[in-house]
Image (cartoon, rainbow, N blue to C red; front, side):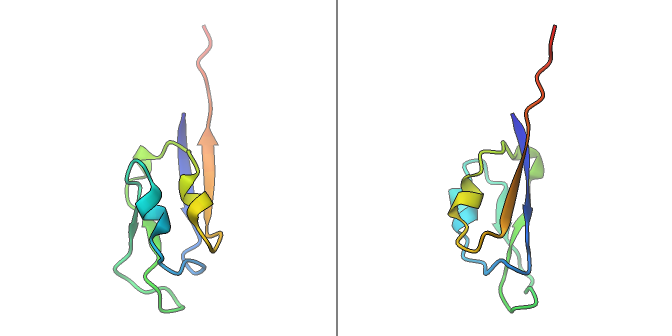
Length: 75
């Protein structure tokens, strides 16, 4: 199963819980401030995302949405 995530940059406070929890290293912390003065989490390797949603579950600010692509090939 493949997935994707969307991070609400302006809602993120840069706690890095998501980046630490991601088992495949999709997320990193930005070097640029958001409007609130925090370094937000950003998607660095979207192709690695499995859609596991661990990042979203760890986020205390509900700043992450997870999308899953569950298409199966039929014979």
